[in-house]
Image (tube, rainbow, N blue to C red):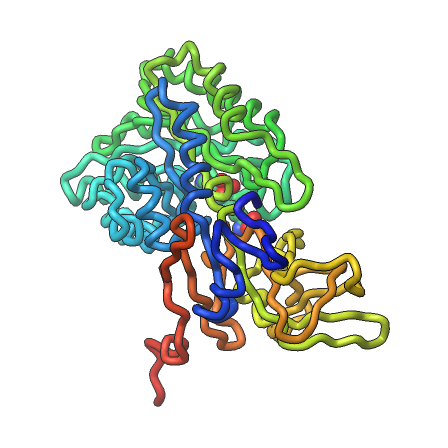
Length: 417
Ligand code: LLP
């Protein structure tokens, strides 16, 4: 994380001391760098500047309104998967015509609302969904613009929980059935076919699965053309990985330029990407405070105030996330191998295993790369209010972009009989 560095024995993010942020806003605390997110987004935009394109940021990665607003101002479109995400992006200033709607379980209400606001396109994930959209569009007297999300049956070579493009996954329409479903879509009066799309998984570090998926999708594009089914866009999803530890993922510009090279014969097709993690992961961090240390039976525990409720990636995917002490370690410090554990009553509530650290009660630690799938997957389990979120605006500037939840927030909507 380039925006994190030590200066005079203290960890800084941009030019702001982490310890000052913790003091001002409390812990646990999510912090994001606007400059880093902007840079990541512009990397996609710059390499695409000569091609008709739309970068639809995947809202699920980090859905704070300020983050969405920042990206909307840079020209981003949005990939949403629920009405909640739709309402969020609209509130953050998104243009409906830049919204694509993915997800396997779109409800009648969600489809109605998306048609009312006039989104760019539904990424249809089943034949049954196609008929539902057609029917609702008919009731509303509208034409729904759709793309079929194809499951290309490609191994994304990533964690099985975040692999989505294999035939056994619930996502998309089977490659074998794709043409047939397109023909059916073409016969429906309230459907306009505008695109084709795929998304094969997340945290992909290699190029080859992206290229294999694109090849398979382009074969379908050719077949559709031969049947007079014309497309306006091709959406190659998100999924580009980031460095958490020592991974060396391909860069956004390599990914995009390699894919563009495949599209030279498809000059009229707009290209869409749906990146999430690669825009925000390394722009974010989670600050946590050591409540206690405990040494027993040969185990060293640093018991911190953030848990799996705040950041579930380590518990859910055994994800490795870098942990940095806020006080710069000295070579003379006596280090031990700590498990960094949270307050939740689950043995899986471990943020990091076996980290060489010198820690004391009340020390601050930073969990790096927590900008994606961090706060957006947080919960109130064990009745912990969710953390505050702060945006670093460059230099020494920072702003609260989400208040820490209060105890009243915990039971909002609940009724005592
Ligand atoms: N488009 C679709 C249809 C998706 O399902 C996803 C992510 C994306 C785009 C964005 O993918 P990205 O560029 O962020 O890899 N919670 C997991 C990741 C789940 C990803 C789900 N879909 C994690 O923390 O690793």
